[in-house]
Length: 444
Image (cartoon, rainbow, N blue to C red; front, side, top):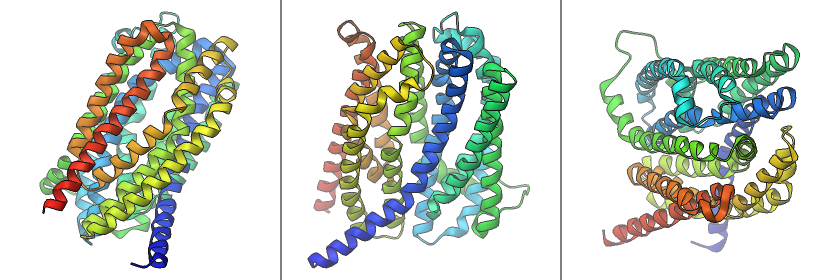
């Protein structure tokens, strides 16, 4: 291949990755911003205690959300493989099967969560001064979880088709609804955390309905009629094979977050407010890396489904260079501005200082996280979801062990150092798997 042809092909892959990833990045940022809206309005209107109450529920909520997104990560790979191989006629049966299954499962789990909210919060060692507010907030948030499950099934199907714009438009709608209702219910009607939770749930319902209607109108392959046999056994098996491993990994990760939330709560309300706020900022900052990784995974899955093995490697090589540049850029942007962003949430100067110190330490390791995310995207796009899931679990275990082992050395900053350590574990294990796959391919 000539240098000119190689340059043109590299440029083409870069453009495809950007075109696919940018709407995901923007929609992810908007989604986080409307999550910010609850914290921003509650923190500035009702104070640091209410903000800590909202923050203390994040691990429970993430347990549900990560289980959903983990499973639908596998579904998006399945949809992309079907699209790459030209088998879009399989879309309706996969879509109907998992819309019904996940919607029903998370309806039951949400009902259980509502009933067990006090026990869950006590289990996490939630501080007594925030317990009542946290309970009010969490019980309402649970109502929106089944809608999130259905939304993520449709979003996975659209990503498999290469359409990442529709989820972006649905998030735009959801963000607008959430911000307007936050201002109305919390700032104007003084409903405190209850108003913030209600605003979030209504916005989630709105984005789910939008995405379903858009999909049915735009894509014939995504239309199915409500019939007696909406759950297809063959589709169920295919989806389970790819969806169960990342769901288990995500669920264990979320359970680990509950342990870490309990660990963090031991530092007191001020540290909880500071670090949960810092994580809100961090969750937006790392989104470009997360979604570029999703772009790598989807394009690799499409190429693999089409039988284009060499193209999958080219996508990975271009993607990892883009990821390295992006992660370094984010580090340079975030370290000097992180403290100012945390201060927007109306917390005390002491809490801002804690959050800034935490954020600065974590940002130094973004390049490690970015490279690990690139390799993960490639491996999962090739269908290697079991190893990826096991790796995620091992990284979580290392993070929990490091948190408890190093607390006497680093104090509350151990939360940052232990997470950075787990990113290093991820990178090493993904690199080992990549080397193993490359050697196996050379032998064959």
